[in-house]
Length: 325
Length: 219
Image (cartoon, rainbow over all chains, first blue to last red; front, side, top):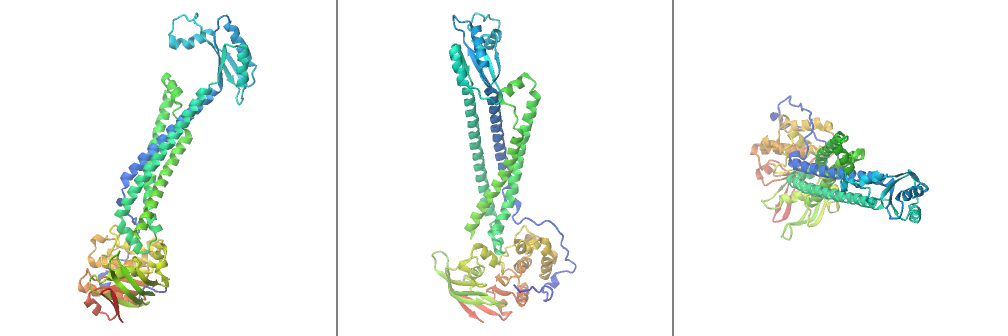
């Protein structure tokens, strides 16, 4: 366009109204085109913060369960047990020795140890009480077989050899426990994914309502932007910037609280780890630690929540702008 | 520059409120658009500003058939047109300076590149001392001048004004008319929609008169 605005050459009808020497304009950051206050900022920040916290706690809890289950599995999976039952007419000590020999002769076994009679009696003490004479009771004897690292012993062969040479012995490779623990860990992951999906859905819905409200409130601004030649992309960007910041703020608050919570739990766990109660808690619930991967997952969640917030708002803004035309 | 051929407009299933409009707006031209209240002046301005589509006929703007334009294309064409509304449409949370600079900001220009230009234009329209003021504290005349400044800051080829003197006293109305005349002399085509006969008598220009849905052109 060749038109030039003759600001300097034409007569200036407003000279009488414009005092001289007033051409100094203070430099300052430009005001946002969409006012921050016109968006339900605080309530939406709180919703995003709560959702991020719930998502982070869910992710952390699932990771703790998976880690503990994995620890239990590897601990339990590294050993098998041979149980030798007392049978009348049989010398149980001889049966134990035979079972020990069979186990030691199997490839992939690192260590074999039989519980003594006293140790076996101590195992049933919690149920029968102490101070009783248990020597007359037919208490089975346990043989703990530790597997060599990385080895895959032939349990079928061991079971068959025991059945032939020590009929009163049975082999327990804890397969049932491991399968149950794996099922539990998988269930925890599925429940966690379901909760995370619900959290994302609730966040999307909340942002959708907030964006629609913001668009309705700011419709006059959107119209003026269109009148001065703004594209839909420019208008959407004005709203998206707000929602992206808001999402980051909410995500950082919620995720930050979750990180602090897990940090406190970890510190408390470390503090009580030497005590009897601490050991029991650790044995039952694991190490109360989400680990570096857990904290990384929470930081990722913060970014994900901010991006979900921004993308949702952009989609709603674009939809609304289409209806404005 | 702009060509209407047999353009008709109706809202919904109602009667046709504008019929068989055929006219041209040439570059560097000045015209008044007039007619009684309810004659369709604002509707015609909205079609000129691409915010309303005709129900029939052809509108060609800057050699583009407006019926085939995408949304972004329409936004590009709007940048070549400035519009002044009767109710100003200034954004109350932006300062006068920021309101006037809005078309340049929308173009993605850096503030440093247009600061002096906007300040100079604001001085030219007599708002040099009101740059940091928010619209709610401006008088009607000041708002009108800010709206005009916003309409011309991006150097449009066509300036549309809807009842620009409707909210100001006759003296200020004459001053605003002088401003439009100066802008036209600088090369901008001007269309002023008004039913203010006294204002039109102030300047001998082409008149587009809407009456009973039809347009009569008096060159």
